[in-house]
Structures are given as structure tokens and as C-alpha cells.
Amino acid sequence: MLLKCVIFWVHFLGEDRKELFRLVSKFSTVGLEMGFSVVIGLLMGIYLDRYLKTDPWMTIVFLLFGVIAAFRVIIRVAKESQQEE
Amino acid sequence: MTAFQIMIKLPFEITCVVLIFAASVLSWFIFGSYNIFIGIWAGGLIGIINFKWLGSIVKGALSEGGAARYTIKYLLKLFFVITVSAFLIYARLADPLAFLVGFTIIIFTVSLQGADFTNRSK
Image (cartoon, rainbow over all chains, first blue to last red):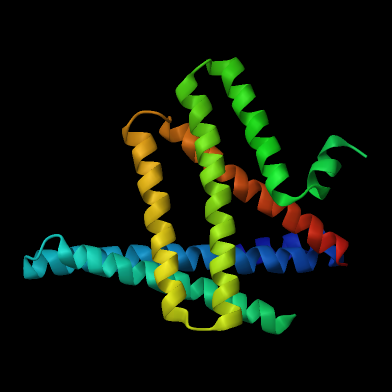
């Protein structure tokens, strides 16, 4: 269903807009990837804190790991864009 | 040329400030609250600073390498943005929702100018 919607929109927008559509999907994926990195880090930290009873240190450490992973995503995408140019 | 087309052609920061100004004046007429007015301005300006700062960090990391140094810079930037935002919201200087609206203006501007840039490069 989702794929059908995407195909419909690509046809609807026409050839000129395909590049724009590609860029929008690419960069929204980056946003999702960044969000997920931070959330996964946070959840892992909370779980470890409960398990090891080290509240709140693991949460802080794993949240930092998540933020660093999110930054790595930005750098990776910027490098990819630079190579494409 | 319409006002909308002129705004797309303006430098990114100016378009942002124009939109922040428009949103804050509109909010003033609708709600008449200082907190909302300040919230939109604070969110918008912090958004611009955050975006430009991130841009310079990514540029530096790409041109000079040494990702560890730039990761620390990124964490410092994040700490600064969180501290200032938290202070403004906890001190009840800025309305949280208005702050979010101000912060969102930058996303709107980037999408608008990005779409225009893609169209022009065709």
C-alpha cells in the first residue's frame, strides 16, 4: 500500500520533481535514523540502570553514545553528498 | 515577483528572521502574551544559531578530519542549546509551545529554500 502511494506521488509530481522527492526521502530518513539512535541509546541505558542498579549513570552514558551515533549519521550523509557532487 | 518568491531568494537567515517576526507579531495580536512572543523569538534564534553552528562543525569535520574533536564540539553545542532552552522554559520566560513553533520555523525555511534550490538546479 505504502509503495503504491509512493509510486502514485512520483507519477503525480512528474519527472522534474523526482529529484526533489528523492532528496526529501533521503533526508527524512536521516532524521529518523538520528532519532532512533538517541532513543535506542536512552532505552538501553534505562534498562541497564534497572538491571545493574546504577541509576542514573548508564542512562547518561548510553544517551551520550546515542547522541554521538546521531552525529556520525550527519557526518556520513554529508560525506555521501560530497562524493555525489 | 510575489512576496513569497522574494523570501525564497533572500539569504537563509533573513528569511528565518522575517518568518519569526511574522509569527511573533501574529501571536501578539492573537494572544497578547509576552511569554509566547519571547518563546517564538527565542526558539527561532536558538534554531538559527544551532543550525549555523552544526554547519560549521560538519564543514570542519569534513575538511580537516579528526572526527573525535568535532564530536566533542557537537556535544558542547548540544549542551549549550539544551541549557539555554531549559533555562528559558523553566524560568517561565518563554512559553514551551511557542518555543517549539519558533524552533520549527527553521525547518520550514530549509525545506522551502531547499526545494527552490533543487528546482533552479534543474
